[in-house]
Length: 287
Image (cartoon, rainbow, N blue to C red; front, side, top):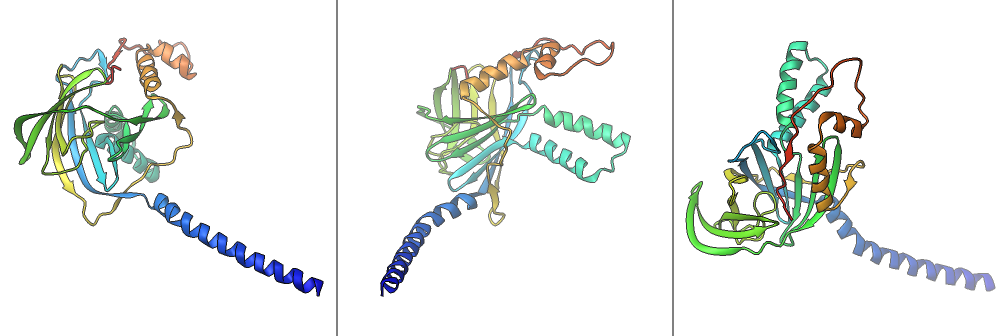
C-alpha cells in the first residue's frame, strides 16, 4: 500500500511537471522561432556617395555605392561594391582554375573593390538601435549605437527620381547636414545613420561638401524573400563607437613600417620597405 501511494504521488508530480514544461515551451518557442527566422527585405535603395572636396591626402576618400535593404523591422546598409569584390574572391577560391593573366586582372578588380567601405550597419527601426561592423586593416570590429537626430523641417521641396521630397536639416555629431526625404515612401530610414524623418531619405550632404549621398535607384524585392541576417563572426572585437573611430584614425595615419610592426609583419630580405605618404583619417563623426 505504501509503494502504491508513492507511485501515485510520483505519477501526479510527473504529470504536473510535464504540464509546466509544456506551458514554458509554448511561451519560449515563438520567441526562439522569431529569433531564428529573422527579417526579409522588400525594398533595396541604392545610394551613391562621393566626396566633393576629394583630397588624396585623406582617407577614406573613394566614391562608393551603397545598398540599403529594408525589411519590416530591420534594415541593412553596406557597400554594394565591396560585397561584389567579396563574391569575386569567393568565386576564385571555389574555382581554383585561374591562369596567371586572369589572376592579375582579377586581383586589380578585387583591390578596387576592397578599397571600398567595409562598414555594415544593421538597424532595428523604429527604435533606431544599430549594430555597426567594420574592418580596420585586418581586424573586424563591432559596436552598438542609438541614433536620435533632432531634425528641423522646412517648406523647401525638390524632385528626386520622380518623388516629391521635403527638406530637413540637423547637426549630427559635429557636422551640419541637409537631407531630402519623401513622404511618398513613409519609411523613417536613409543612408548611413540618417534616420527618424517622416519618409525615406533620398539625398544628404554636409555643409562642407565632404560627404554627399544621393539615391540612384529603388528596387522592390517582392517575392524574393532576401533575408536580413547578422552573420556570425567569432573573431569580432567588441568596442564602443568612440573607440572604433579612435582606432581607425590612429591605425590609418601610421606609416607602413609602424603599421606592419603593429600587425607583427616583418620585412623580408634586404628589400626596401614599402613607403606611402602619411594620410589623414577623415572622421565622419567628430563627436
